[in-house]
Image (cartoon, rainbow, N blue to C red; front, side, top):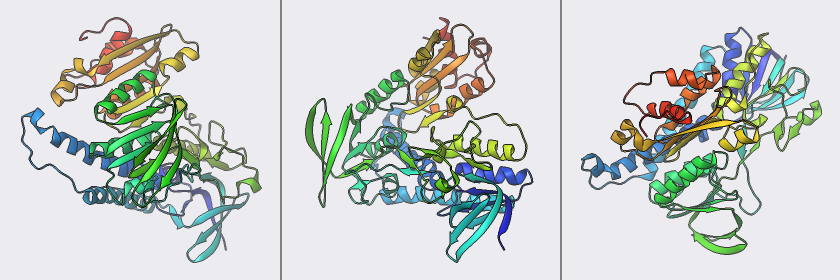
Length: 463
């Protein structure tokens, strides 16, 4: 006899497991089906393990700068296998924690591959065979995977995707990174810091193309200073793979050249995991591998929702988690606010870090706003200088008519932690006057947030 649930969540990534737990907290009978590992890509092969790797690179970078702080550190080096082992250990610890949270919240865990078998019906293939479960509501949270371009497919030897890069079979000496979005630039930053001769190829006209143009330019300058080679408006046309090297044909400015590398990382975007779910049979629509939904993550088929990466941009774990809570509360009869993509912050953990929320300057102008723009450099902040991190800037964009904070953009040390201040401000519909009248603690990096606001209105004190 089929098990019956109020809600079945397909996928235990950040959105899926959060949705399952919140629904259970609300008193619903919940099951979560996961085909691979609890925590999904984020905890196991994405957000968390990459940050562990980048932390090791950050410490290594600081050790190399010991003299700048009046310290002595001799024979500085690293063991790439131990760096990777630490990263995998962090991921394992957190993935195991999801199982504990499921037990604590009485969420039934089913390890297997799910397929929609009709309205309210799901067939799950497990290692013991096949079983059918039923549910009043279903949330699809199957996530996404790396996009593969013809001729650039990873092989795990000399050409890698993000999974290969997280458990590298060797330390690259001469590295090509295809794509300069968050994934590509984070791996470029990691391996470059550890000594790889790194080249980044980006098809768009600038690195980190979703960021504000001014921030992208600042970041590029920092990357080049660190020794990276940046090729913009360039395309990798082919990869000639040898036993110990890869010869890449790169086209830029109408000219092609062949360049030799020992390792290539392909980071050219993602595609949604929509195959084999039975979406077509139920009339669930997709658009370029992502499930089409409304602002409340409804698929258009009664009782079926889609959240997270499989439901489209922005492809961020915190967006997926928030959608999970929203849908759980909606299913329970609540009236939650829809998730607003423009209020979801983006964070990139390269060196220097990049963080942003809301409109870029260009997008604000395109939307017809009359804007005021403020900027403040890290070099004008006492804490940044004391930390030995004087390179960076904070940029704020306001509606000149209403004082609404339209966007905030940062590059520099710890900006991925600072950005939440502006996120809260936007959520509370804070105006420039509110931010000006807020007392920021001294000495902190957050003071730059205050000064950037002041600068937008010609009132900056320290620059």
